Picture: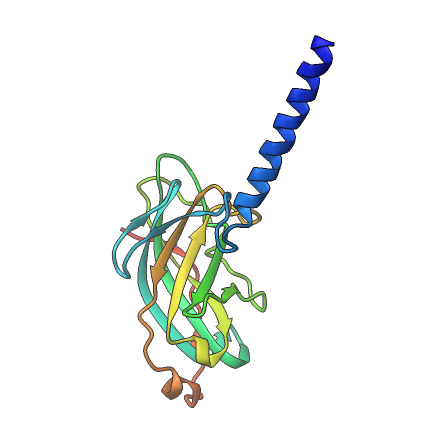
Length: 189
């Protein structure tokens, strides 16, 4: 009888714990126990995550991209973010990048071109500069934050670098017929 009460008490305790945990996670829909640890910084200033440091170097917007002989159009605007990145402690890479607009919408890197900066090996003490290209709606281009993380599949429970991009007005860019070139990553001093 004593063993039965002990087992029943254990089952009730586990059930209550699960119920309270489920209730707590739904208490606030924006709260997630496994969200990334966002490290915020400023453009042109180094921002360090767990495995790499990134600095926003330059941002360009364009209505067209030039990739060799190919020209890519868009219904929105191309955002080309040039960053400088260096590994912390051991070889690493940037495996995931996105833009978040002022409304909280997230735009992943464009899959219409090869993103050479993503997954490019980063060595400690050897900074690499490269461009990451996004295609976003024109109305989202004024208030964007660059998000960078190591893991391309799951960003949860790791650091995520967040750098606001200095973009003001893109209307002049949209009427410019000159395509913007995209440059390959390179090591810099």
